[in-house]
Length: 166
Image 1 (cartoon, rainbow, N blue to C red):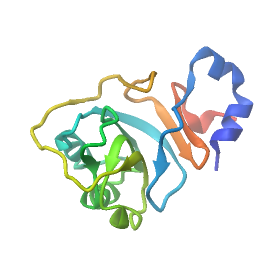
Image 2: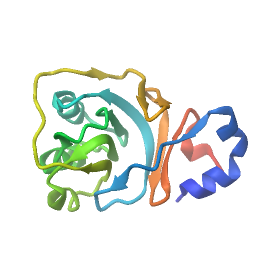
Image 3: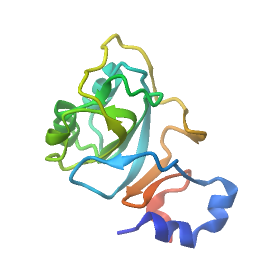
């Protein structure tokens, strides 16, 4: 198992070149799985989780869904039902730049879930947003099909396959 701190220690040149980026430390884990690494599918979804759901309805094949929710704390983009759906469809986990709800259900799912907070209110469902496009989270540009690793120390985004590092 590879950890973010070890990857950073062994790959300073890739960090300096921008091939490995460290997400701002605003995220916290909400699920049972406290370590994950995989290829990214990006979603941009502000206060509307329709595209989060439709993405998780597809086979994840061990990928990680990274959602730019615009840091909204007015509603949740992910909850217990979506956690179960993600687990069923072989998603490794989700990173939500926004809020989750049903944290008592999410903790039971065998996926990784990182978010910036909780909110009991559900999101709108109007189909707004984008899937598979580049997103920005607190100044970090994230491209679809890049790689990420998340653990207790933080979240790394990489243009290089994380599994080939160290």
